[in-house]
Image (cartoon, rainbow, N blue to C red; front, side, top):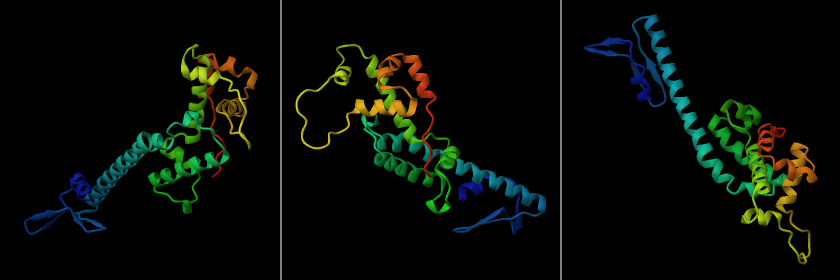
Length: 213
């Protein structure tokens, strides 16, 4: 508050003995002093502008922390995740918990997630994850023979499965994702993903999933 007060000086304030006092600072309050209505309004305008600048810097700092630290840590290795509804719900909950704090909101404010993201200028985290997964699919499809990731992607394991329900393979998952989100059937997926420019344009146009809240 002291910094804001000093940076918003410019009006002489009121005279007290040999001093000119423009503001009085308290623990949780501030009093602006002026010798005329015009000077008081000028002080208020400058003080409000300085407060807004500090708030914008704080918001930008929190947003940069979200984008440069929080998101990479939360989504580490996400290109190879097999997403379930439970995983999607967990990602969205973690994402919005942080973004609400950045926006100074809570669940009790009943502001939709899409509104918060729009005000902060960030894309849905699930959209980022799904784009990255399908972008990685395109890399694998176009990868020349001999590259280990491509060979693993194209491999067909042999042998007997253990008892119980088998885990969903990443290739099966991402094929379903491409069908669900892009409408590309599995038998055409390799051909479409193999066209770099076409695939990139499809991913750029990928819309967010409907917002649950």
